[in-house]
Length: 213
Image 1: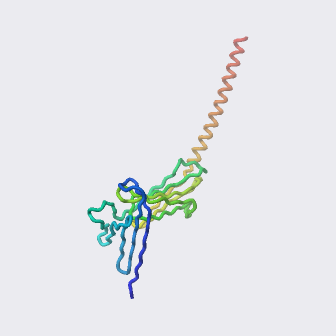
Image 2: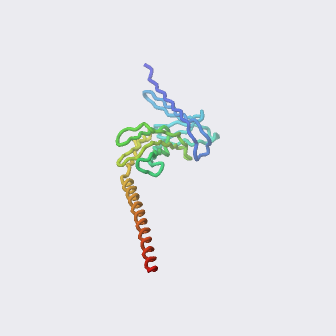
Image 3: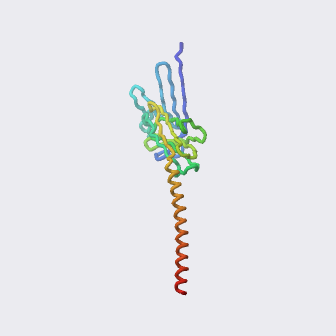
């Protein structure tokens, strides 16, 4: 019986940022496997750059020495960070940004949760950007309106990770307390200012009465 052959082709558009490349390029990832072997090759703008040697656990370049150099890094797991787009204010629309950086090869998969429930609405994934060392970075955003006590998480999966990486962010209830304190302080300041103005007027009136008597 013929061996079963599986072929998977990924075609991604990669923006070159901070490298000698300019504009946008097409990065192809070709995976082939059968019952006894597995092949992973990288194709850039139609040229095969190299393949991954699983026995040696390294990337083997295939371009001739005289060709324009293109960096093909070894498998590298992403670094994941989570932050907000603008200053957080309760009940004001904002965006959370999950950044997966310095990974290779693509793709990465990004999952969002709110209070331990999966979230898909308001989620977007940007293009892949190439770093100067040949690795890639990508941003995923989640539109949200912060409420006290809400907990958000961003989970990134990649073939170079044994499992996944998760970053968690909780809406700080102190934001509301500080906002309330600032409001109270402002009201108190205004009241004190009014009382001070009234007291000054009273003193001026009394002084004029004293001078006229």
